[in-house]
Length: 227
Image 1 (cartoon, rainbow, N blue to C red):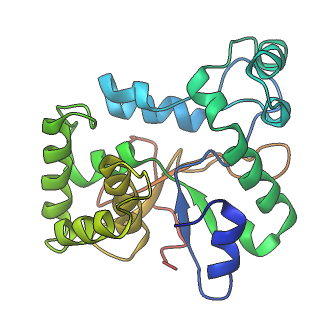
Image 2: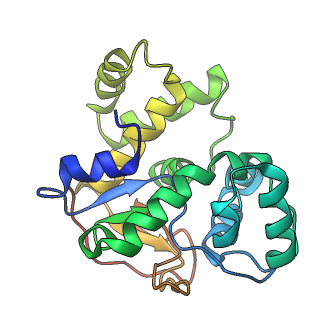
Image 3: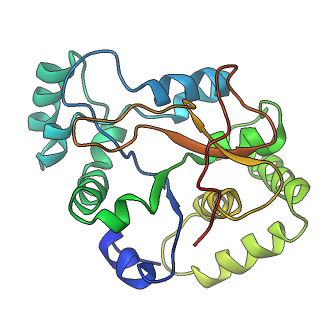
């Protein structure tokens, strides 16, 4: 486990070729339309689309208090900033700074989302919310269907992080991203297929692995490699 993304990069910068993270990469400076990647992910997930949180505009990530961040987001994006999004501020800002200042990191880190990954593995919408017992079991079965070694991998990771205040559901999410990153069935794809870049040149995409696209306009994306 790492306390912040800089430590993760220091540990793997010499060996990693792909690191998937559940942190928004590529931020809008203004505009009320939101990121295309988030909109497509919500469409793909259907009722579970509420799991996709709209990130703050870049300026709002630099605010340490919610009222200030919310004011900036309302002024720049025309919408309020959710508490869930604000709680991600420090992580988003740290990733944004790293990728803007370290070219090698910019080509290694890509954004993903666990629920999109599970949806792709299952090849159909999931029925239960992930933080319920039924949802956990459903996602574990989905991972097992993708790779029989996944359940013991989740168990080992959960045991390794015991006492670190990490929820088992979060361990499951991390394993889903790891299986998405490593070579396996299907191809590495993204929502959208041809992601736009933000004003700083960072791609605004959500990566997943599947044999066919989740979006009718999607195409196979390259860089099919792992750390």
